[in-house]
Image (cartoon, rainbow, N blue to C red; front, top):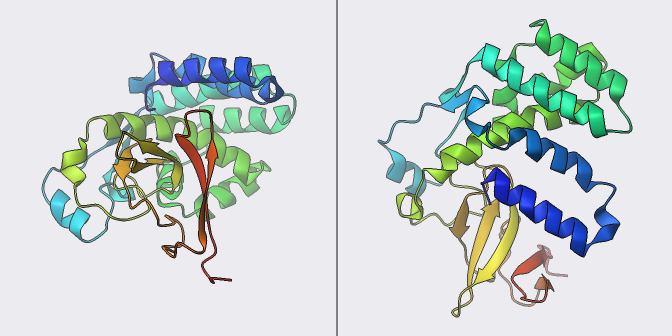
Length: 242
């Protein structure tokens, strides 16, 4: 679900259907409200040539790597500032840390390129070091940085057709390499799709196989269904077979 407006509508419906989530969802609602209509203004772009795509797919390499990442610092700083201000308005905790992060970004004290590259490659050392210098929790900084990054990844993924990455059999995303965050069983034939936790790209995947450990033993793989339509599910696998 890469469209911000669709995500916002989904959150509104979730709050109505599950009041118990009422305390945690306002933050995400506030973030999606400021992002809606501004998706193209993150200042983050990906320069990925069209050649060698099929070669990457065949060899199990995602299309995007940190080398394809390009940023427009002024635009990215402006976007991050809006994001942090939205968080400050609805967050009950972490105001001092968010304020320090906002100030450091506004004053150009953070080299954003390696920080976004670290988030994309899931190499957290650069983020952890920068967070320690600002006395900001590393998970908080990573969360803030991932908002524009995931927004930009979603735009890139929207332009990729499933046919371009046909033949992909891995449990991680063919676009950005992130883990699957959700899965669905769709259609009358019960075809299984995974959805990326970062760019929200969907790709078909073997129905009886864990995308995390690769286990495909029917005796140790279990699907727990959620929702009346049985489309959403949680997958659990015991890789040791015990």
